[in-house]
Length: 109
Ligand code: SF4
Ligand code: SF4
Image 1 (spheres, rainbow, N blue to C red):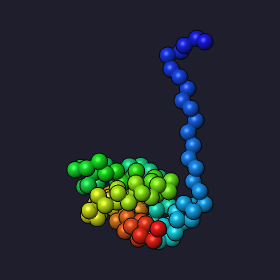
Image 2: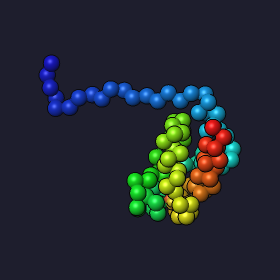
Image 3: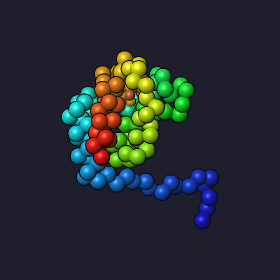
């Protein structure tokens, strides 16, 4: 077969079960502004914890959406709840309250 200098990546898919979706809806009920997030990364760029550790608040959003709660619990401990991310979010997502809500929901597991 002729080589074109690149290969086609295998398709990747996520399996999000009903339980994870239910937990996502509960998070959106606690903090409705989360629905407005369009993953721009502004919060990650300004995050205080991210300047000293590998913490990535945008990744935290995705871990929650994907139902990867064990990794999420470890990540959430790195947040200092300083609120800088909330100040810069262009969609007005209340990230500080979102993080507190995630912690509360994880404690119920
Ligand atoms: S800055 Fe706001 S809109 Fe952008 S990724 Fe963060 S929470 Fe989402
Ligand atoms: S509240 Fe947490 S996620 Fe937001 S900027 Fe501060 S340390 Fe980062």
